[in-house]
Image (cartoon, rainbow, N blue to C red; front, side):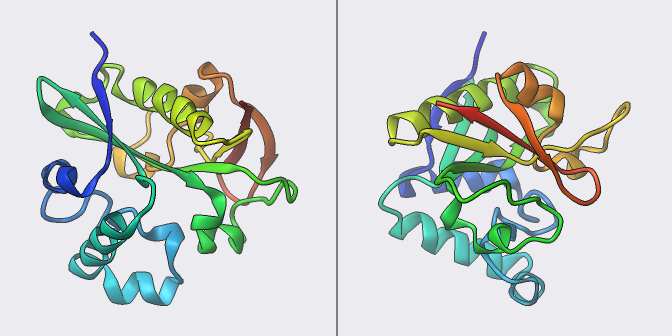
Length: 186
């Protein structure tokens, strides 16, 4: 059974906190990695990032991503917004910039430990595609990792190539390291 997917609104903030836990999912990032400089990321890690992301969610005109629920329990998260919302992504040396076409971006994917391997990530990617399309996007980018074999969950914070490949994304470019730029026309 597919999880229920809902946009992250201020009213659902406690659900994100429950999902991410006290540490904030990936080492205190709180989904702020691509939104700020490396210096800001280091300075704010943990509680500072939590507060910054909460302010962003409260002020947002449109939800910055989607939450997945299983039996009313938060099970997963995906960040999806216009690429322009992620200034560090736009100047990244690790992520290849394909062209200047306006597009949306999937920058973070997190599934709670108890819910991994149950199709939550797949459902979140499908929902992100539909969400971006409903909000007028014509192109959606993702930055998954190219892997051989298993990868530790904290390393897969942008998702895996195989997941996006199955969701209809195609490779558009390769960056430095294991990041692959994948795109889907909507």
